[in-house]
Length: 211
Image (cartoon, rainbow, N blue to C red; front, top):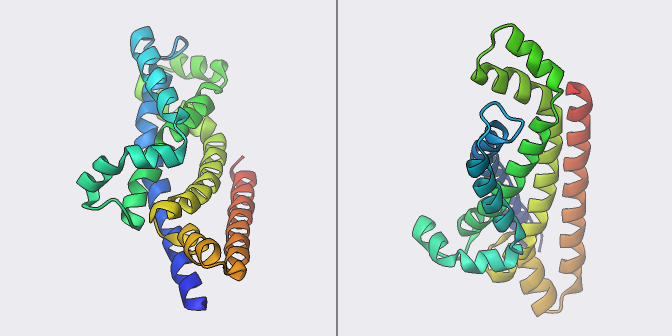
């Protein structure tokens, strides 16, 4: 039992780590475009902003379990199969990108306009304002969004287990639900609770340090 739980825990950590990393890196790109092209952005462009915003909202609207099923052909094309931890990472990442993009956009757009104007008065370029003002001023809020993303992804990995994604969710379904072994359900639930609490505590500590 301990070997099964340990293996599943490592699979969950593996999925959460890579999906978080990839979604943050990729999601930063549309977030920057949204910030730059927003009505109050550095390069206002209503068409680009509205179209990209609509795309983000559409992908955020899909329930994760449905998105996983829809993405099966794409997942199979990327990793060669539709089940397993690597396959789950594809769906987890795609579901997280629009969420983190919106979080980053909101965080950056909350930057004090006075700071932006001050940077302009000193002759800062758009890229300098973007990274040295927008990103620097909003980093604590962005970090808080990443913490919430990680917590959400933990829950998503559990759902991924229902269709062969591996991890704690897979063990809970196969052993706890299908084999009627309640102890597996209890232990899997406790592990997920502990992991979420640990992530939140670490996130709060880092947030206090950099705020």
